[in-house]
Structure formats: C-alpha cells, structure tokens
Image (cartoon, rainbow, N blue to C red; front, side):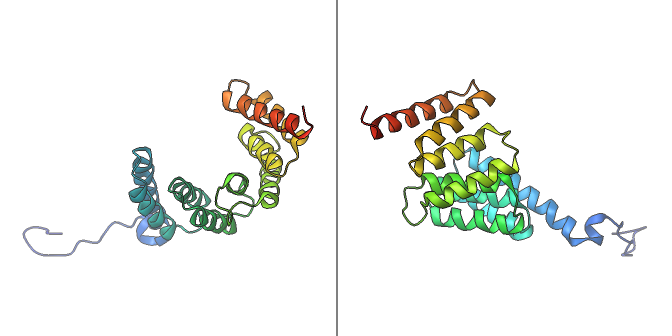
Length: 190
C-alpha cells in the first residue's frame, strides 16, 4: 500500500481469514459450492463436478459438499464415483441423514450391478429414517424403495403410505405406491 507517495507497507487488518486458514478455506469452499450449484442447474455437469471437487478439497469434512459431488457423479452416470463420494462424506459425518438417504437410494436404484446392493440400500435407508425420527417423507420414500428392491412389498407399501401422510401433495409418492402395489399383486398372482 502506498502511503504519502512512499512505498511504505501498511499493516494488513487482522481478519478471521488471516488468523485461521480453515475460515478462509470455508469461504473459498462456499464460493466453489455456489458456482457448482449454478453450473449444475444449467446442466453443465462436468464444470459443476470440478467446482464441487475443489470445494471438498478445501473443506473435506463438509458432508453437504460430498453429497452434492455424489449427486453430480450420479447424474453423469458415474455410480461408482457417486458411491465413493457419498461414503467419504459419511466418514466425515457418520450420522448425516442426507448422506445415508442418498446412499440408500443409490444402492436401491442403481442400474450398475457393482453399485446396486439392495441389502445395503435397506440398511442405509433405515439409518436415515432413524436419524430423522421418521419425520422426512423423502427418507421414507427411499426406505420404501429399499424394501421394494428387497422384494418386501408389504413393508414398501406401508412405508410409502407413511410418506404420503407427510406429503400428500406429491404425486411421485402416489406413483411409487402404485408401483409397489402392482409388484405385490404380481407376486401373489393377481
């Protein structure tokens, strides 16, 4: 900083960022997260992936960032990378209901046989519902899908009905319920 025409260094103001690099990394991570969100919403998945990768590099214990990176990978059809991101996030935040839920959904619905694992889907989905005290319709929907993937159609129907009680306006849950009822009817031959 120039002071009075001389090249004299003025002391920099002390800020939280100057004192604690973690605060600085958190702010930079948030910037990359925001860019990633914007790019994701525009369908620019490769660019969004890069932003989220940088965000998790800067703030590796932020479970929400790992979840977003996992979702981008999933949208890109990179199920194994999505799985790795979600599991890494879960290591940072073992009880994170969002990560547990998304792992449950991914294992229940993945087309890739190396990612699809109905037993793991059920375990993760149950943990997500427990973590949310069974108060999140989305988590109940995931649990119902996990029951369905395990051919436990009665449990799938009952759980989806609970999701519909919490969010009766969501047509997707009604469609899920119809799918589960049809599977049960087909299983019983009627």
